Figure 1 (cartoon, rainbow, N blue to C red):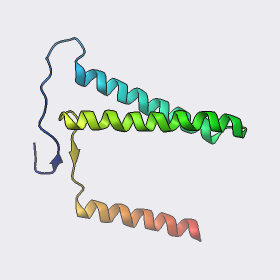
Figure 2 (cartoon, rainbow, N blue to C red):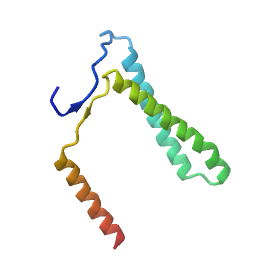
Figure 3 (cartoon, rainbow, N blue to C red):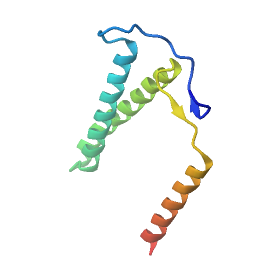
Length: 105
C-alpha cells in the first residue's frame, strides 16, 4: 500500500471459490446502489404526490443501508480509499466553477 491510502486493518477472509463475508457485503452494497439509482429515477418521474411519498422512504432506506454496508466494509479493511491530492481538489474546483459560471450566463 502507498501512503496515499486510507484504510483499516484488513480482516482476512477464506480464499475459496465460495462467497465469503466480503463478497456478500460487496454484492449487497452494489444491490443497494442499484436500488437507490432506480428509486432516484422513480422519484424524479413520479407523476403524483402519492407515488412520490411512497418511494421517498424507500429511497432513504436504501441510502442508509448502503452507508451502513460501506461502513462495515471499510471497518474490516475491505474498502480502500485514497486521500485526495490538493492539486486534484483544486483542479476539480476550477472545473466546476467554470461550469457554474457558464450556466449562470
